[in-house]
Image (cartoon, helix red, strand yellow):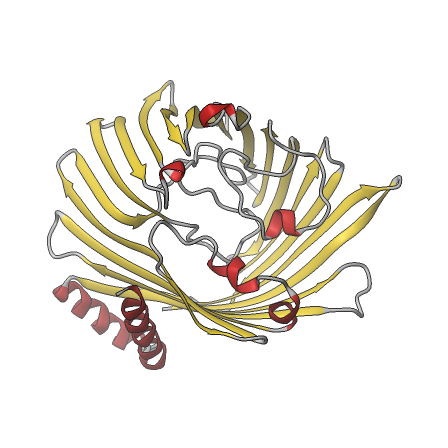
Length: 396
């Protein structure tokens, strides 16, 4: 059944791309028809070119990605909403050939249900389709109930989100804008206009992987607060977070505690983050964030530990102490540049993250992104890897 669904949505994605209309009049007509039928379709097509090297720029590794996303939504009335969203990705290039287990890396994040299919898995190319959203939502008064593959976004911060025990994401995976989903049942109940209860349960492939928790949201002193408690993979867990302002600066924080695993086999853990951001009147935006991760190992042997490893809520980052800073400036409404950096206070590792974004038109965006990783070895910083990405995105 899962393979048949993937085949169907892939076929529709191809038809959508082939028949998409850029003319504004035709688009307006299409939108009105979608409203009449209470059915909408949108998505994007992206081309991503990646060039990677360590220290010798003449020794390059390439990876090309053609990435299509199609989002279906059907809303028959004010109470029910049904969603089905699929990613279609075609990888080719040197890294497909040389990286061990490349296909397993791409499909490794699938949820409890197997909704991922490799249509082509050869030495030189991988064609994968994955349903990362598929849910039914019921809303009535103060109740909001969702069942299926969905995004349960309990995190508040931008770089690290310790409270996000259901959908931990990797900050370096910038091309996955929607972020991972999880197979879960979720019930939200609004107590007052400024407070609510949020309960969710995500079954694992075995009982060891079960995740379930209850969160309480409320507003006090101009701040949004949240607190939760539950079970994370046989670990008792509890956490809290807040978001507000100190004068004109944004101030956010999260902390999550994980007890030792069943039978004491795993160590207890604490992950905590703080961030401050400020937007100047001249268009400059700055953000500073810090992370403490008790289970951090403070060693970075290769960049795969950061860019390809599967992070977990309990061990959210390889380092114990990490600082992040970013400054960005919009030169015009269509041209923006930013420079970010991470530094491990305990692991003595440095990561530099520049980005340039240019909006070609309403539906076309061009990005130039770089990720450079350095580690202190023998008294100096040595490169572990550099990757440069050129991405063209068309949304429809």
